[in-house]
Each structure stands twice: as structure tokens, then as C-alpha cells.
Image (tube, rainbow, N blue to C red):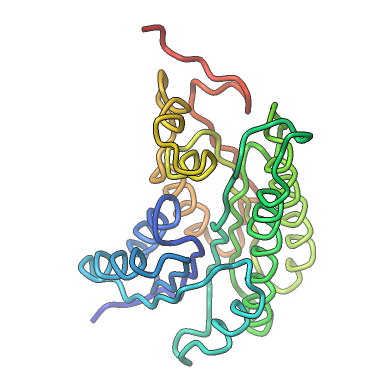
Length: 256
């Protein structure tokens, strides 16, 4: 009989870091509550993870929709309501331009997803953790939340907000026995740049050329590490960069 360690809820779980994290936490014995906008990809992930022996529940969710967030968590089956680990992974960048040439609709989407979506989900999950006096919240930030870079403006602003919000969460939840961690990746090759450049795959590819970038599995490995520490240990934050990326805007690329 499989022994489960608890329930891990992951947003943005249909691909990239979210899906890789689901696979990593499945190895630790967590049941997986997976949330994302693209239901067909979620269903495919569910099948893949169940074939690995995981117990999985999926729900379609756009974290920007506060009403939908409330509904999804309030309507979970009873056996899926006690969430032990929350990984706030849903996030994105849109556009790459000077702020004075930026698209305000892009700004709204980034702010609503990266900041407000994280808040909506955590607001829905954290009271249960407080009631049980245990839990672990892992927020996925970015090196863009530590350093600004040219044409990063609003995206950087949202990730600086994630960093500040995470630090506040840590202060406010410590007395309730809840651990809070932030993971700040550098250049990770996922769908991130394809989304940023609105489907322009050839332009996105150039972001990762000429150096060994991070992979989604590298970040999932870090999440697996922080979640699996003894209960009295909290990893406050990790900044994870490719060796070739010296700072947010500086990457050493191999000469062709």
C-alpha cells in the first residue's frame, strides 16, 4: 500500500517548472493537486503522473480570476482540502520593450497573474495551514525580482513584489508553524520566452542560444530539496543561475 506524505498543490502545473515539480514531489510521496489554464495538458499530465504511481486531482484555473480561485478551493472533495505544500508557480512575462512603449494590456496580465494570482491562491490555502499549524508555501520568483534589466520594467516590478510579499508571508506565518520559501531562477528554457514574444518561437530560441541554460528539472530539484528538509528547517530563498549568467542582464555566450 502506497504511503502518501500529504497533498502538494501546484499552480501553472501543465508544463515547464510546474509539471517538473509535480514529478519531483511525486517521488517524495505527495498526492498532487494540479491547477492550470490548459485543461487538455493537465489531463495529459495527470495520466503521465498516475502511470508513475501518483494520486492526482486536476482542476482548470486561471489564477487571475479571484472568483474562480475561491470556487475551485471551496469545492474540492474533502480528501483534497488539507494542502500541505503550495507551490505558487503560475506566472509569465509579456512583451520586451521600454516601459514608455509598453502595452498596458500586457502590464495588466503580468500584474494580475504574477502578483494578484499568487495572493488569491495563497489567501485561499493559508487559513487551512494556519488551522493545522503546519504547511509550506513555495513562491516562484525570478532573478528579475532581485535585479532589474533593460526592457524588463513591469515584469521585474511584479517579481520584486513577489519577493517582498514572500518575506512578509514568512514573518506573518512563522508563528503558525508554516514555512515560506522563495525560489528565484535565472534563465530557464521553458515556454517562458515563447509566451513573452507572443508565440514567436524563433525569437524565443535566441534567448537560450550559446550557453547551457537552466532546465525546468533544475528548479524542480531545488523545490524538492527545500520541501524535504526537516520541519524545523526553513530555506528562506534560493537564487539559481546558469553558470554562464553572471547577472540578470549578463550572459556569457559561446563564440561560434
